[in-house]
Image (cartoon, rainbow, N blue to C red; front, side):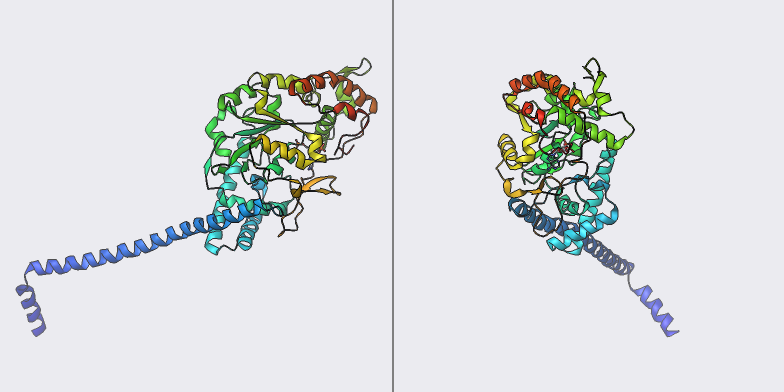
Length: 423
Ligand code: A3P
């Protein structure tokens, strides 16, 4: 009773104003604590991402640059990891963490980066109608995936250099050797923008490019551009000062290499000898067969010369790229205005493969040779057909030497095998 009476006294005596103030202060306190807890969780998330990036930037990028500049170990980007399974990606990320000593949260962020980049590249490759076939051994890709953790840095730019050809010339070998250079960032897959995907627009094309830092060159390779009529004009309208690289190889060996590739996918196709002729008895060569047409370099070069001066083109000898990769790389680096970083110290001749391979990084036992689709054994072709093809190409080759001011000496190979060809 006393209690009730005192309460009623309290309520009656304390002015409503004080009660209101008391409730208000309670609400403010509650609001303050709510805000504090929100801020804390927000701050945690921000640190998580920020630190992840910071550590990754400082550790991964610097380490990579150091590694890339050192002669004994090279790491380079490879977008071809899109074929990998998620398990492999996890392994890759854990190898990133282990090799670079970054913490678990950073690895988590890296995992997210790999997943994002992976799905993006998958979409892009699917859009391009291309199924990327890894051309290096799978374990080697772990190393290359490391760079993907830094792929967010810098900006995406349209390429300043394109390897436009030629198919089966040695374009993959050149691109992979160039990617060892720390100032080169390249798309692993062939974007086929100027021949198959032009209507998708330049923004789509730019999006395919890896991010580059200042001073780095963005590049891609799509060997079919060289024989695409519309490509010179299209590339010129994108960048008139672009640098073009063309890897050329004895057109006869190139044709056999091209045929070997098709044969590996479609074993039922007729023999090379059958496809090469419209009428073999009359000695009528079928120059419309793409395997032969591609090798008429002078013809294709003409359309490029309508848009680009020779000074913007560099011709790599596919043969010399095999026997002296460092020598060819020196010329390519000079042409691109790059420091000569990729040298003979980066290559060794792999007897099993029969081709030069990139030296393996010191912390890996992985061989760095190109995959099985490069350096295939060619079928034996009737020597008479080979002779006739040499005769067919001779005038075009002469024209090509004249146009480029370079003698590739393919005529000397008429009675022997080309370097690296496993005939
Ligand atoms: P073959 O498979 O007929 O021997 P591309 O990459 O343009 O498709 O060219 C493939 C060719 O590159 C191969 O043709 C091979 O001869 C040549 N090549 C040059 N350097 C090579 C290397 N280091 N490893 C494997 N192949 C190489």
